[in-house]
Image 1 (cartoon, rainbow, N blue to C red):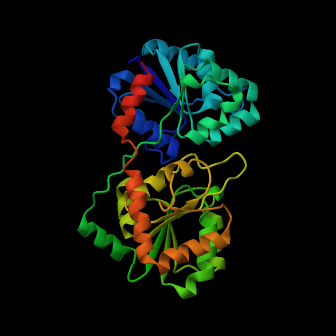
Image 2: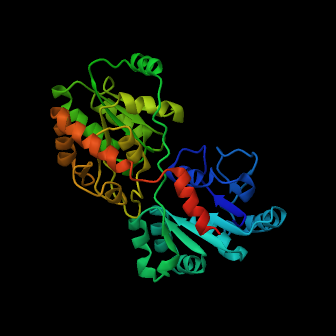
Image 3: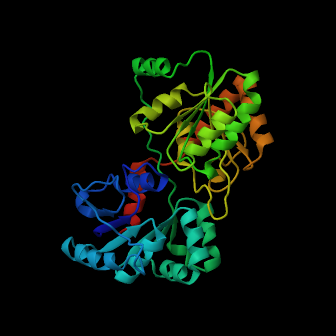
Length: 361
């Protein structure tokens, strides 16, 4: 395999879909075969990871200084090709560095690139050694550009979630979270408008008198204050809780305590749900799932009765779906089993790494 520079704004331990996608693809590689360069504050220098500033707002193009930095890094570490999940601006940087590069696309990134800089985007994709997309839906976005289809590869996010847990710790979590007879609804994801946590809160405000419920929202993001204002507005302080500082090792306990996983994501202009890795994790934990009916999620759940998919912003459909699962536990179990079976069809991270290694040859 040619030595590869992984050039990215997001990488583990940053908790985001793109960060986890890249990390899972490369973590089984020999560390001598790749070098990660990232400007994310959570990515610390170690072994084969370099943390450095990649863009400067006051400069046009914003990556110009990094061009010279990376020329030195490429020479020092004998880099032979670049892999980047950030078509703009880092794909531009790879394009002008004039060495082979691979672009990874995820949904919002390519939509914004086509909208903002269509000509440059097409040049970057046409010149790429290979293009990796996280779903067929993402691949379809670049079809109108007339890109050579033979260099487009679909690599779904890898299933790599450890479902092992400690029973004693689970009971300690149950006690800590003060869970008794309540049914637990859970959402895991960034706190932003597109994920739809606000709509779930509004539904709970409508049905709370009919059910004994708690809603756990896990994630960080700019919508936190708005979600807290909704909780206060609807007097749901005893029903809805936001957890914005949960370690990866603790997530399994939330999944195990939950009865329903809900993420009614919306499409917001160019911003779509590329795949929905957390939905795959919920399915692996045998939870019944309610999700938005858009983006790559329709590939994740590709048959009826694997999950309930609702149109974005459809309050009535979401309310009816939540109540249906609460009122029909046997049907909820069937849905959970079907979702679990579907999740097992996806490759684990090691298998996806082997596929990527062939592409990087």
